[in-house]
Structures are given as structure tokens and as C-alpha cells.
Image (cartoon, rainbow, N blue to C red; front, side, top):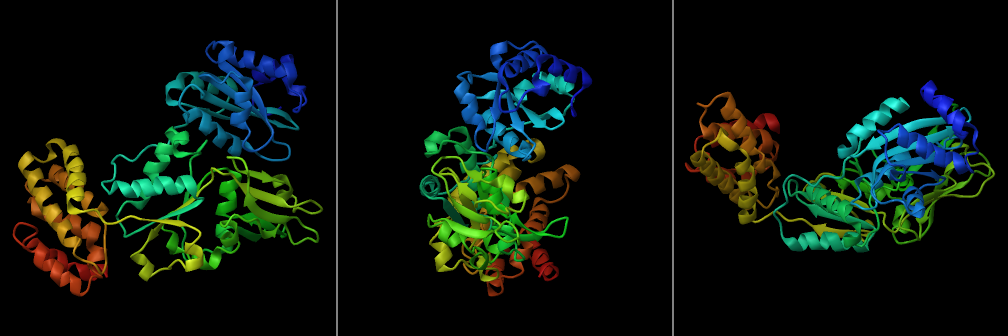
Length: 488
């Protein structure tokens, strides 16, 4: 027995759990509930529920089968670690129960794992309001406790056409792959975060049964099929073995995959079998190893909401002499992405074949009125750093700059960078209250927008005519334009 304080090892031995068959925990499991209830701040026994979990995606279902999952304080999962280390997968499944709204949720989650050396407490997570209970258990079990938080909505709600939100919501509800397309700074990633936070609070309102925290990755031009899907790699013994890429890893962990700035990689070249798979078919994406008769790696779709992997343990052994290893995305699984339509001129575009596999949601540059509303929420936060007159001046300057930006069509840019300027100005005033407001605006504008300005070409002169007006940047525009050469 390892990983537990000796006093707990002795108590587990007394109730027979240390030697019990993992497949038949029986009465030992009930006694474990009593032991933990007694040593977790004297919890009522009906607030502690322990289950055995044998495969991916089972945790929530196993708890529901007990009929006791009604604001359970402590949920315990027993998993077999002898063939497969499932701690990460089960702890991520616990996240779903820990952040769920009442009544079906737990406040503290504990994973007990079985190895040949005995039982180990391997993960402890808790909701914020149950920190005291988790602290007692942490000391009793001799492991660190992890605070688990729900997916937080962004601080600010995007100001945009509500039809864009509806298109995104309906597309995610009805299609497995959705891409947000628009210029930089329009809030594409922000919009996805808004949606994910809303779904996590109420999946059924979005036509889904569950949601775990998505995996967010940013592709780059060095990516190949191996990074995205998977491919051969050399293990520590010099043998070729299949290594799952981001898509397969996300399916294995039953987490959505978000490709942020997806066109940084040449997805047309590296999507490989995903073209066919996103059309609803099953495809072969590799072999478990280079050995004769090694298992095929198959990518397909499950008929259940949760994703699953059939034969995952064989992948570690090279898959020799076994059937296929199947990665099956559940009906609730999604592949989402953001696509920078401006940088597509310099990076990669989606071909028509790939484009047809995604719903494309356009995220336009907001109207000036929407920008002004969003700007006001930032100004309201500044407090006494600026007085009312200065805030009004700042709002007028930034709205004028944004209006001029919307007329630059060669290199469209969203409002995100301009919306950060009030915080720079407020910080600058705290350092030196005598610095003129326009100087601080010019500095923030250069630092946040300078690289964009430096590539405008002829549009820069037209923009300069607007921004050099006295009521905008005045003479500070000359200072800004004189510093652009270093940013090219």
C-alpha cells in the first residue's frame, strides 16, 4: 500500500478494502463511505456516495444509478489503475459533477485508484464553498486538494448583432464543427467563451446533455497531421508507436476542441482523414505500431452523448494481435475554431472541401454605436482615476478613432485594442497626474495598434488626416506616425 498515511492504511485493512477485488468491492465500499464520512468533519453518511468506475464516461452515470446524487457532499470514485492510468480522465469527469447546478452535483470529489500495491487516494477536488471539508479530507488522506471552478463567462458581454449569437448557438447545437470568421479584435474567442460558459450552466437549453471544459490549442505553420490527428513517434525504447494528436486526445478526454486562430496552420494539408470523418464516416488514421498485425487506429462517431475509446489500453502495448482501437466522438462532442479573415491574406486559407465540413459564422466589426456602448462599460470601471470631464473627452477621442478605423477597408480591425486604452490612460494618470490626457491616449494607441498602422500603406495618410484633427489626437498623431518605422 502506497500513497496513504499509515493510519489510513490500517483502517482500510480493518474494513477489508485493501485486499478486496476491484471488480467486487461489495461491503467494503459501504464501509469506506462510513470511514470517510467520519473523518471529513462528521458528514452525514447519506451525503457520501462511492461508486466504481471501469470505463470512460461512466462516472456521472454510475453516481446517478445510486439514486443518492442529490446535493451529495462527498463523491468517491474507485478506478483500476493497473492497466490504464485513468486519474486525469476521471478527475475531468468529476469536474462535470462539481460545477453542475443542484440537485445533481457533488461538493467534493475523491478518486481512489487500485494498483497491485493496494489502494491509493490519487485526486481530491472541491467546490469553493466546500473548502473546509476538503481541507479536513486533505489532511486525513495526505494529498493536496484542487479547487474546481465552473467555466466563467467573460467579464464583458460583446456588443454585436444578436443574430450572430443565434447563428452560433444554433450551429453548435446542430453541427459537430463550427468556425467563427472575422477580422482581428472582433471578439471571436470571446464569443466562444460566452457560449461555452452558458452551455456549462444549462446544457439542455442548448440541446446538449453535458459539457466538460474544452481544450484550447493554437495551431501554427509547423503543424502536421501528427499534431492535429496523430501519427508515429519513437518511444523510450526506440520503437515506433502511434501518438494521438489533439483531436484524438480531446475525444479520449471527452472534451471539446477549440482551434484558436485556426488558419495559422495549413489545415487543408493536415486534415487528412478528418475530411471524411466530419462527413459522418469512420476512417483509419494510423496503426498502433510498426509491428506486423498491429491494431488499426479508427476514428468514428458514437451513438451516445459522451465520447469513448474502445481498446485504449492496447495502444500502450502497440496493439499487436488485437482488434481496432476506436476513437468515437459522442453526439455532444464539438470541434470549434476561430479564423482570422484578414491574416488569411498572409497565412493560410480554407479550401472549399474543408470549408464545407464547418458551419462558418461571420463576426463583423461592430457599428460605432455598439463600440461606444462597450467603451462606456470600461470607462465606468475607472473610478476616480479620471474625472467625469476627462472620461467624456476620452470617450469622444476613442469613438472618433474607431469611426475612422471602420473606413479602412484594406486591413479591417476590430475594437478590442481600442477598448483597452482607458486602462492605460488611468494607470498613466496614477503615475503622474500632470501628463496630458492626449499624450497617454497616443502612447496607448501606438503600443496597441502600431503594428497594424505600420502596414496600412496609402490608407495611413487618409487615416492621419482624421486623427490629426484637434479634437482627436491633434499634434500627437505626428508623434505616433514617426514611431511606426520601428514596428514594420
